Each structure stands twice: as structure tokens, then as C-alpha cells.
Length: 432
Image (cartoon, rainbow, N blue to C red; front, side, top):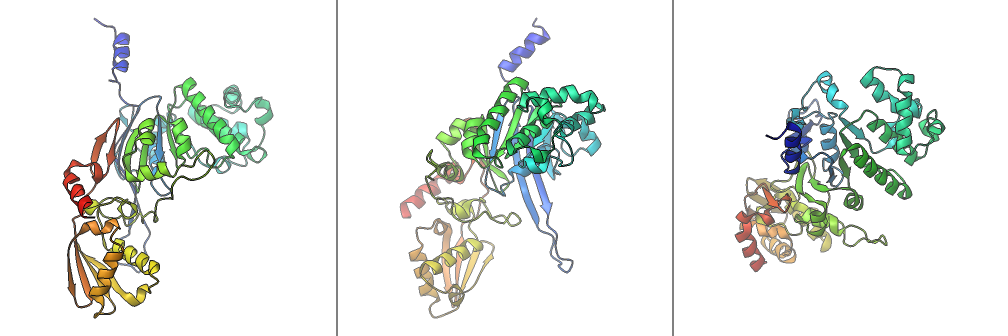
């Protein structure tokens, strides 16, 4: 019979051990304040909207997305710094989401946070030594002098050497890179298992960034650390991460190994991000993604990325706002006055009504609009159209939420890779 130790080794090698962190259908919503005179319910921002992840011990998971994608909120929720609306976060199999402050305290030493701005994350009135010692004092209840040896040791390890040169200095006396080393020292002094690094190099000079990433890799190998690396910088993620999750509007739209994400991206958003990576000479390869990130309090129907997607098609979720944006672009391109042409664009279920100011020219204006913008993917959603006086009513394809489709070592949320819509894609390619 195998001993327990041998059995543990066998389980580790065949991948039967539990992940360090498990995230199951996580939601983090924030209610916006509304006017005291308004009767409408307060709008809700779905900062994290149904995220599921598993993080193995010793792994570096990169979470990538534009500003407003929800990646920082996800990191803060894992660390217990943002309230969880629904779903679970488990650390070594134990649920840590939804715990009270006191109940969470024993778990905090296992999860530490490296913030984006080292200037703001250090107390300007505390010396570097006192700032680094502070979390250890909270954990063991000892005074600063009792923890001094541990402080000097960790300062030496992160490159603040010799320690006596820095230990009594204040943050204002250190460079940006030195401050971030102090922040890292403060994060690791208590012996955590997981570090959540939120844009840890974005506020640093280019000459310092590679050194900080190299330090984080060394610490990972020496201390058996696990990282959640939050960034919008794909180049650093490619260098640092084992696996990558691409976030857009609170959801993970693609997940896979770093090699897969960069060599064979599946989601149109991922493809656009990778295509926009600069060359070594600093020149950008492709134009940035068109349009702006949607309002987080009013998410688009269907796929949240569809208003900006160049290959969107009928089930992706077109709505009145998309047609409004299309008409505005058309008016700008053809030097027309939007307000003198369009009275209103509104939606009734799956029907969008476009009201023209001139009833006599309504049909001809619509036909010109459609003919001159036919290459736009929005027209793939059109099922039927009907003109009544100054109003042209468009019946649209029913929107559909993208499902999670397995891919090599990960998944993608995109209708283009869903077999349920393959027939629609083929038909639309023929007629477009």
C-alpha cells in the first residue's frame, strides 16, 4: 500500500490536487446613485459579470483588457477588497467570498495585493522599514524592533540593499522603482501564497519595468508564489504569464495559454488587441479597435463587443443604439445634418423604428443609407423592413448571449465559434 506522502506525489503529477484559487460564476455589481427626485430604479454597473476561473499553485495568470473591462475589480474581489454580489471564491477549497472582516482576517496573509501606483500605496509619514513591517506586526502582534530582522532580510531580497541605506528613509526620498520594490517587500513579508499585481509596472519608467518583472519572476520561483497579473500591456503579459484571460465588459471572452492567445487568438477582441501590439521599433501594426467601450450601466444586448466588432453577424445583438451610431457616421461621411434627417430611433422588442423628418423622402433616404453602409455588419441582423409614412420599421434577428465554447487549453465566448450559428455564418458570407 502506498504511503500518504507517495500518494500525494502521485496525485500532484496526475493533476488531482485542488487549484489554489477557484472562482465560480462571480458577480460584482455596483448601484449608481440616482437623483432623489427620480422614481426610476438606480442603474447597476456589472463590473464583474459571471466570471469563472481556476488558478493552479505556482501559475501566473494574466488578466488583460481595456480600462473599464472589470479586471481590477476582479482582482480586488479575490483579495476581499471588493464586495461580492453573487458567486464564490474558494482558497484551497475553503470559501472566502462573503466573509466578514474578522472571518477573512486569517486568509488575508495568504493573499496580498501589489497596487498600480507605488507613490500612493505607501504612507508618506511612515519610513520604508515601518511600512514593510506593518503587515507582519498585524499578523504576529509583535513590535517593530522584534520584526526588524525579517524586514532587513526581505529588503535585501527585493534589491533595497544594503537595508540600512533605505530602512529609515521616507517614500519621497525613493525613486519610483525603489518604491515598488518596497511595496513588493511589504506584500511578501508575511509569506503569502497568492499575489495580485494590478498594473505593477505601468507607473514606472521603461528602464525599470523589466527589472521589476524579473524580480517578480525570481520571487515566484524562490517562494513558490502564484500571481494574478492584471494589465493592459500585452507585451509584458507575453513575457511574464503562463495563461491569459481576456476580459471585456465584466466577462472573460477568451482564455488560454499564453502561446495560444498570441499565436492563435480566437475572439475578434483578442485578435484586435494582439494586432495592435507595437513592433520592436515602436510602430503600431493595426488601427485601434473602433468605437468606445459601452456604458457599463447599460450593456449592449447579446455580445457586449458587437458594436465594435468588424465580423459581428445577426445573432450578436444589434439594437437601436447601434443604428443611431450608424446613421450618425453616415451623416458625417456624407456631409449631412443628422438632426434635419432623423427625428427619432427607438426600439420595441426586436423592432427598431427609424423616424425621418421628411415623410416624402423617408423611403429613399433609408435606401441610400442601406446602400452606402451595406458593408457594415449591422445589416446582417435585418430580418424584415417596412415603411409607413416617415417611419421605417426594421425587424431584427433575436440577440443571443455568447456561450462558452471549448478551445485548446481554454475557451472562447463568441458566436463565430459556436456550431449552432455556423449555417447562419455561411449564408451571410454568401449574400454580403
